[in-house]
Amino acid sequence: MKIGVLTSGGDAPGMNAAVRAVVRTALSKGMEVYGIRRGYVGLITGDIVPMDEKSVTDIIHNGGTILYTARCPEFRTAEGVAKAKAKCDELGIEGLVVIGGDGSFRGAADLSAMGMLTVGIPGTIDNDIACTDYTIGYDTAMNTAMELVDKLRDTSQSHDRISVVEVMGRGAGHIAVNTGVACGATDIITKEVPYSLDEIAKTMLEKKSRGKQNFVVIVAESIGNSQQIAEILQEKTGIEARATVLGHVQRGGSPTVRDRVEATRMGHYAVELLEQGKGNRVVGIKDSKIVDYDIQEALSMSKPYDVELHKMAEQIAF
Ligand code: ADP
Ligand code: F6P
Image 1: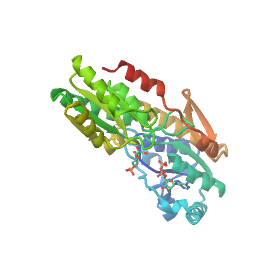
Image 2: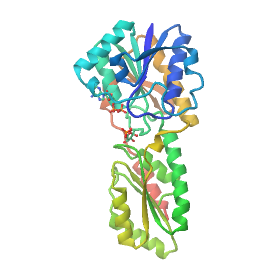
Image 3: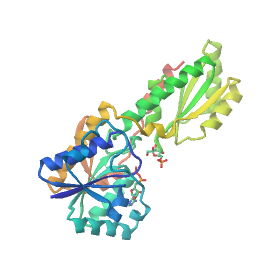
Image 4: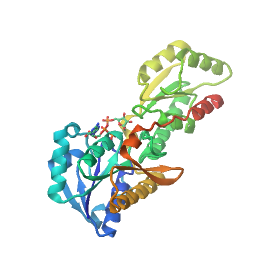
């Protein structure tokens, strides 16, 4: 059997570990494996290279993706999907492992509808894929955010300031709430839980009167406006405030143990599915166990936000 592997959408630390697992598992089963560069772009243009054992040596500890990644508007069209399928047929590629997010899985479903065996692996720092408890890159991104907020706390403390820190997460507050808890933030602002800047400012002043001198506020990217939030809090409290947007630094760096292990498990399992002739599936992790779902079913699920964790953080913050 010949299979391909690609990474698509935003990169995430641990994608290389997944690529390595896919390639080595496939080779161990006597399959031929191709690496497709820059996601669906490479599938359309034919930027496809054979992978051997050595091609994935010394990558498990590296962030980013050796296969590169991209967003490919052409693949959203029927013509684009047909071109990609034709390229696979030309090379005899029957199965495809797609490492990416929901958008990439929609593309995989389109290819499935044309007769390709496709399996998705959740790879995004946002952890916003509903069919899995965990997405590759999430743990590393949160650890990076935590380390950076710890550094900001030092300077915020020295200056008796409010530090408003915006973390990534596109539409979801999972990174924000966990980083907030891990950093002992005074406030966490996400779109999933209603908030009032008036209330936050009032509470800050109460805490100040009880001796608190500096404040760390974590804001989810989906809220945005962290600069404006800092200005409003400064105006309402009279405490100097600074905003910091952590940005793409959260997407880089050497993957943590968790990311390497889960990426390896999911990569291995994806190839087993293809070997069994199963396609149109998404791999996930539920209650620490590897699971797989039909892509459409996976895309129709919704992921709960941990409101309890958010409220708990607020309850114990000072
Ligand atoms: P992610 O996979 O992280 O959600 P994107 O939403 O940017 O990232 O999607 C990555 C790529 O997947 C897109 O550039 C496009 O090529 C493909 N894709 C996204 N949405 C669709 C869709 N609805 N149909 C087909 N392909 C899609
Ligand atoms: O999906 C991962 C992510 O890093 C989001 O958290 C963020 O909103 C987005 O990608 C940024 O995308 P880009 O790399 O295109 O700026």
